[in-house]
Image (cartoon, rainbow, N blue to C red; front, side, top):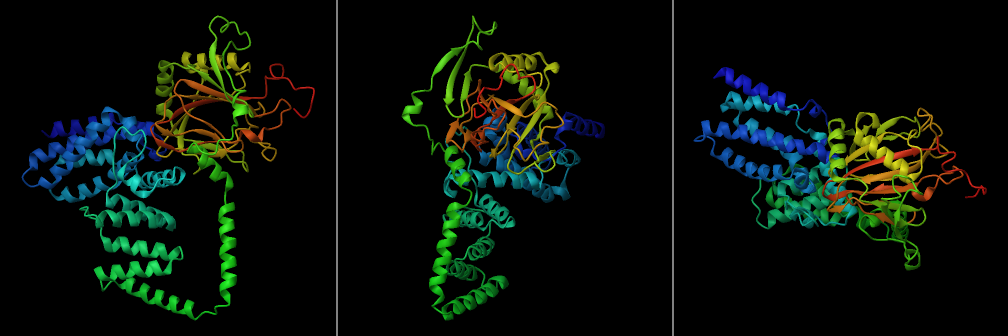
Length: 536
């Protein structure tokens, strides 16, 4: 019996991929799908324990059965399940918090098998950073797509396969995470949602006193003193001896009295300051407003006259021998900068091969630091990526050749194929692919010059969100599996085209896989020569 337990424990340990031993699960749906199987293993182990202790652990049995049903649904379509951001957040929360609480509950009566499994698998669980990252992703989606808390809490999102909802406790957790970030705006929204669900009769372990404590302070921090006092009074009705609330009420009353006694002549200057503050708010990050509007499909700047100049065609790569008899489908997405889309340009089989090659190597995506010229992680790029060389797979080599044939550019000086998988609310905020004048050393180590052009494969459809947008010109390009878009980052003169500043919008629902090829200047001297005019 003891031997069987040891063997079972070791077997579970061996089945876990070594690549799990990392953080940032929330930055890649592809990696998070493996957690579904991990959680399923835990449920199976837990059910074995329940069979031995069923009479004592009826409460735990009910909890496990609920999780069993959930993981059964999730394992049938892991990517679809995790494509719903609420499901992804709750997976982070369960594995980081709730499983630990369950372990504490049953530890004194635990059988060796279950505790051994938990001990082994816990080292591969998401951590606080993952849970916080998933929570921040929900808040980011809420802002970008103008979602109210009730819509997000009820899981009423477009294109969802597995509808899920947030409990009052989940809403409270989101509010607490916003609070720790001093984000009092979202703290107020989610504490109010938690309170609303409790007022509607939801049975929950969340405590109204705690919620009101956070909520009243968040409201006060945003300058609404009268509302903060009203909430504090409600808290004191539930707990008259609450020390902090009593102290806050006295302070609020003091501030209120002081404001009433203040010289009314200051009103005009305060009104002026408020107007100036409002103007500053309107001018704050205008690019972000454009970016978020484009992500929602708003603010497009293509006039009907310009649209008439966009065409679709069969393209042979400027009479490339490989495509004369079998040209590819090409359509114009935008005119300035010129963005073209190639349709049916990568097969499902090739996509699966690329994903399988990339998945074991996925790591947090990096960006070039303009000050150091080195690669570093950044909060504004939420995804994981891997690099694939042509020599390691005939499929990757074939894809590289295809890009060369259809662009007419030499890929021997290009960077390796980068494969990216976006996580919960995965995004890449507005950026340039090319190095600007103040970044002379950005690609110095490559020795191949600046990034002359970008080729981007879409390797999955996205149910909602996930567009590639160009805020400078008001363009939105939507993901479509099996297609690719291409644009030049530099003018023929070698100067950067600043209209190519672009962003990857947060994925609202679904799973986004892309791969891209950055082509460089070296080797293109006779393929894309300079024009006679320096201004072109």
